Amino acid sequence: MGEDETRRVVTLHGDIDFSSATEIRALLLGGVESGRELCVDMSEVSYVDSAGIACLLESQYAASAKGGSFSLANVGDAVMHTLGNARLENVFTILETRPPGQ
Image (cartoon, rainbow, N blue to C red; front, side, top):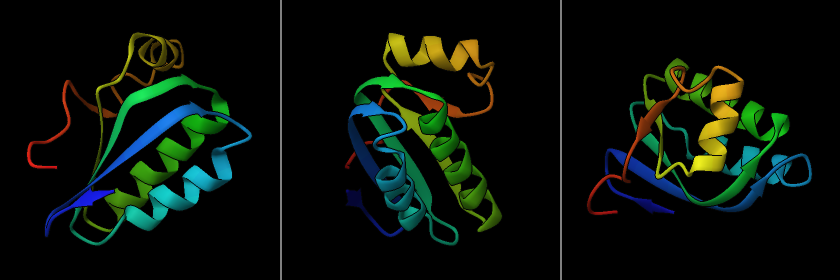
């Protein structure tokens, strides 16, 4: 996890699914702090299921509730397809690349 005073960047790997959801949920919710940006680098994520989407949505809502922001970066085609099928591609802030300096 990279971070500075205003931003944390978390890089996830592999599948975000039912078997990894509890661990990823804890990691992302732990990264949400008042007034900070949490950026999730998805470049190494190959698959997301409904449990993974729930983790991402919960983290986004938690960040917003604490006055911070939440974004996804480097989202691959397969994951973007899943987000599109769930009609969530416009719900998340999606960056082409992760923020510089992280």
